[in-house]
Length: 386
Image (cartoon, rainbow, N blue to C red):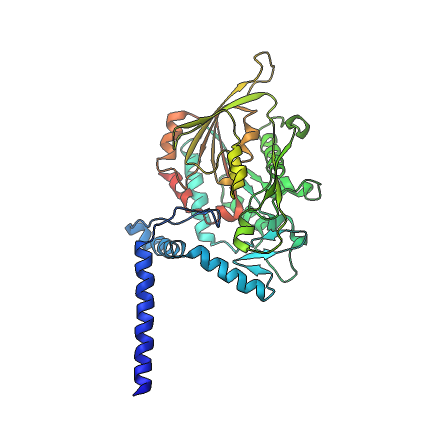
């Protein structure tokens, strides 16, 4: 009798716990962006028969439940404390490496999905054959600094991934492999990547920028002309937040001074304007990377004009469209010296038709810029076909 009652109590307790979690899930506010993980959260799930058939509806639902789980951040922190107490060198998917570096390994892509994303880009280019397009894939630190990884760790090759993506890509699209651009500079004094964040530094962005300019037949600006300035020495980024390892080494944030052009930034999302591409207010908060361009926005426009009307320097590109993830944020300030107008679209947030926007604005040049681990999972690229 006692055993039967114990079993019933366990079942009742379990059902009450599930019911409580369900109630919390229903009533708790749903976030759209996680400062803790520095990424966009799945904030809604849209049903369609196509999504049901290709299984993306199920995938989105699973991600939504995970991203909106009550007290998600607190669960991460509890797990982190428990893992570090066991002297673990990996936590929440973040690896503690040598020289103060934290890394996030990349899993093997789902090649069928990647082929769909590239096909969407190919069809997008096919609709605008008179517009020159480029795809720049940026590696992440785990690919460029393998010497700092623990011997037991592994990450799928981003070089192989980039080469496979290139094989899917139309030959009419200019392909730039960021690995080739950055590899010669991995032993430089200036870090190409933040130690504790998933982005590259301004120096990493600079070497990718030079490769892009050269591919267009345009002379890039030298580092000396850009006059690098350190604006922060206490940046602790997304890897630090997610990994929650003790004793992380803060990173520096560097800004470049544009020698020829002044810029006017217009954020279409909220109608705000700025005469600077850098937002000092973000240097006082956790997400210091938003210092560049003021963070993530669906659509921005940047208008550039010569600082000195007597200057001989003129922009080589009239109108440039950048379709991107956040790796572009510290590279775009370098492009203002070469383009009269830059429009910046983030397909993850832009609800309109990018094809219609292209037809409306008549761009001379289009740059798609993504880091490789983001690209292989970026379903918003499918919106390019709309």
